[in-house]
Structures are given as structure tokens and as C-alpha cells.
Amino acid sequence: MDATQIREHMKVVSSDGQHVGTVDGIEGDRIKLTKSDPASGGQHRYVGLGDVEQVKDGKVCLSSQAKPRPM
Image (tube, rainbow, N blue to C red; front, side, top):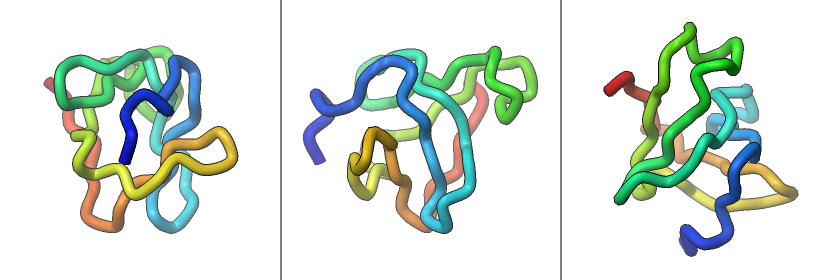
């Protein structure tokens, strides 16, 4: 997976296509999700770059084991 394909404001979806969040940026080896997205519960959450299955059709698609975590 090439992290340079991930851009701010991209949608992030789970392995079953459910909306997980919106990219705020990349910090180290994690994707920071916006806290203003309704799926975030009002706080920044993070997903490891290793949890990204692929970037497809303008969306970041996560593997089945991926779980966004607050940090």
C-alpha cells in the first residue's frame, strides 16, 4: 500500500463497505480521522497504515481486522 495515495478528506470504509470516517491527515504510520465526522464521536481517531487494504475509487478501504482507535 502506497501511503502517498491517501489524501485529506478521503472517505475511510471498513472491509464490508461501511463508513468509518474521513481522513484528516497522516501522522507517522497512522491515518488521523477528522473529529467532525459523525462516525468519530467528536474526537480524533486513528487507523494504522498497516490496516489499509487498498485505496480504491477515492476511498481508503480497511482490512477486516482494522478498528479505529482514539489517541
